[in-house]
Amino acid sequence: AMAPQTDAASFRSLVERAVRQRVPGTVGLAPGPDAVIQLNGSGSAALHRVDILTAAGASQRICLRRSQQPAPSLAMAAEAEVMRQARRKGALVPEVLGVLLEEDELGPGFFLEWVDGEGRGEKVAGAAAFASVRESGLLGRQCGTALAQIHSVDTALLRGRVPEGPTEPLHCVEELRQAYTSTGTCRPMLEYTFAWLKENAPGPPHGAPVLVHGDFRNSNIMAHPEQGLAGIVDWELAHVGNRYEDLGWLCVRSWRFGQLGRPVGGFAALEDFCKAYEGAGGLAVERSIL
Image: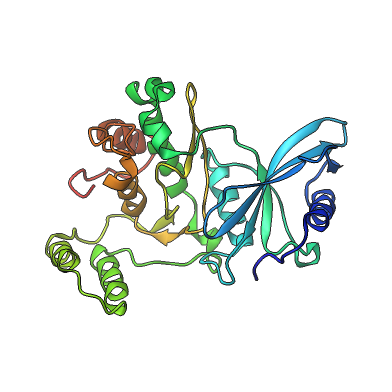
């Protein structure tokens, strides 16, 4: 179900009630008209900045994430559980503070920890403020470590809650080709690309299928100019699949934001990224596949 439409006052009242019910140690919203502010979200989710008042009388900023799709690829409650499991493995994932229930009348969603960081990929890849974490390789190493932690989650804990995708590259290519064919269009460049992928696809991956973030890229990571990785967000495409889906997606040209000399997200070298992944327990990375 999608989030219901309400006026601003009613929405604020519903959020305050939900905060009291779902976020432990909270007595309600912080005073002032800006306690609930809608932010730029994504096509699948609406985001709200929420300032709450704790039982100790302190103001605390958190985030509310609500579904905007009638049938999301991953249910909000399942997305919250995926985040919790990845966080338990040490990945820098915002803490889920409480999951909405139907009686909250806000639609599917959850409250989560507020992350201070930059989410705009072009800034992380090109702004002078992030030069240190780029040039030192810190952010690239942190991303490699985070993916190793995510891929170490016991998928049995998520069985029946997250989709299981194909792990063999040729099957993934075939799914994409079928989606393209269904549009009824003909694009010679895409025809050539599918033919090339079929001819050059690597064999089945080594190791068991893993928890895949599904959209691990620059713009879905929050970064700090000095500390580097601050949080991994937007888990709605999480599934069980091939680890190279995550490893490779971060290296796609589009997510480098013009910084083509740094193949990992436009902010890091491939070796820094791969060695950190392997050093944190990830299986050896075949560079040729990336």
